[in-house]
Length: 95
Image (tube, rainbow, N blue to C red; front, side, top):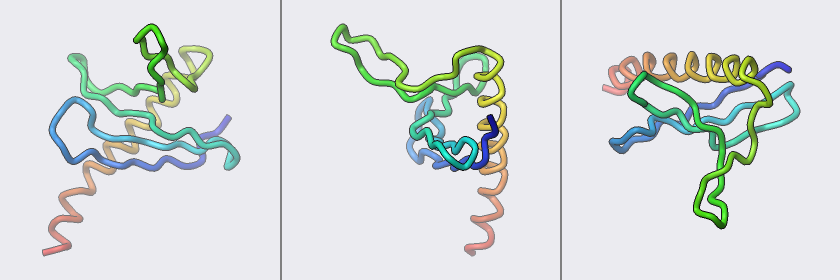
């Protein structure tokens, strides 16, 4: 499995959610609405989820093992950091 595209949409409002991300796997399968969240121990990702009838949120799509989750999280957070680093350059280019 290769993540062939990562699209980061930064969240403008204040809060713990910093971005919403879509990833493409092997140029064939897309997962939308992965959230980048600022937690007490730093940034992490939350997979797309839906509220169940019991009020709990359950992931709609998620990795089967922790190694795959870690790999996806590392790729997403690296792209998020790149997007954040590019933000000041974009602001000064607009001036």
